[in-house]
Figure (cartoon, rainbow, N blue to C red):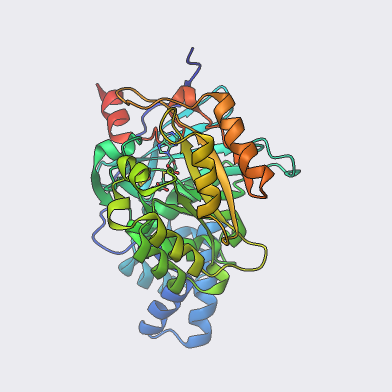
Amino acid sequence: MSQACAENSTQNSTPASQSKPHLWGQRVSDLTETLLAMGVPEKKARYHSHQIFRWIYERKVSSYEEMTDISKLAREALAEKFDITPPLTVATAQTSIDGTRKFLFRLHDGNTVESVLIPANNGEADETTSRLTICISSQVGCAMGCKFCLTASMGLLRNLRVEEIVGQVLELSKAADITNIVFMGMGEPLHNLENVCRAVEILLSQYGMGFSKRKVTVSTSGLVPAIRKMNARLSRENRVNLAISLNGSFNEQREAVMPVNEAFPIEELLDACREFTLEPYRRITFEYVMMGGLNDTTEDAARVLKLLDGIPSKVNLIPYNPHPASPFRRSEDGDVETFKRFLLDRGVAAMVRHSRGRDILAACGQLKSAEDARAAVN
Ligand code: SAH
Ligand code: SF4
């Protein structure tokens, strides 16, 4: 029984011209540099760039006129240089019976991506505060071709721009008090590494939204060179959590569902994880989608245990979310429990992550917005 209800109907918007770079895609340092290049004295350039950031991310303004603290001259110069028209608009929003909300964003070129807001308490006993996690997209579609994932069937249409990544959080934070960000929506974040890293820097900036690096997680299917690059690319203060979609306990099995494993087999992936700089008490999350008869036996659990030996890790077991035309089935609850117990009893932090928002196709691997958009206009 689907209880999904449409909150908003399609909303008209003027697409941003996209002929110039966008203000939301600039880090504080980029703004300072721009102002300096415009001839603004250094002290003023720094002060102004912090102010602008605050205006965008705290007051959530979308026009230069609203930035009344900033000199008219600087505003005019910036308007010349950077677009400020919102680069994405909420086209539809749906609410699940479990409180999960899915948003369809329309981009300037008519493409669409989805973000999901997931309210607190995924069943962890240690969480006392309320959490609101936003699951954001990094690409329109995805090139990785995982056999179990609906986004894969779109192929890759394009990378999201920095402002389109940041914009998902900015737009939804106007109405919601977002506490956590996960890059687990559409797309492979590390296939759009530079834009994702810049977006992380903006989201974490103390002058803007100021998210804690511990509350932001980037998930990857296992692009080994990009994991190394991200490790080198992000400075200490921007070192967000890393999640790896393992989804298999040996190469042949993983390769059958994740083609990326052909290029980067499990051993290489885990080597990159071992090299990944972790702060004390931080761990890498390993996601493991549990598919009945495929990767969910105790022998699989034993292999996973061996693989993760020596890596500070936690394991999120995600019972597979079936979608139409998919040949896979969700593991039996008992098998998921046995798998979890096996790991827990041997000292591996394992938990079951039941996908949320299943009735509105907002759960893991069910994001495929182009089709939703087409369905909405038909
Ligand atoms: N591309 C990145 C992040 C997006 S996918 C990645 O693959 O890590 C986010 C998570 O959803 C991944 O762990 C993926 O394995 C999982 N997933 C995809 N399809 C799923 C499905 N149908 N049921 C359950 N989990 C799924
Ligand atoms: Fe892409 Fe992740 Fe889906 Fe694989 S699971 S196709 S990497 S979005």
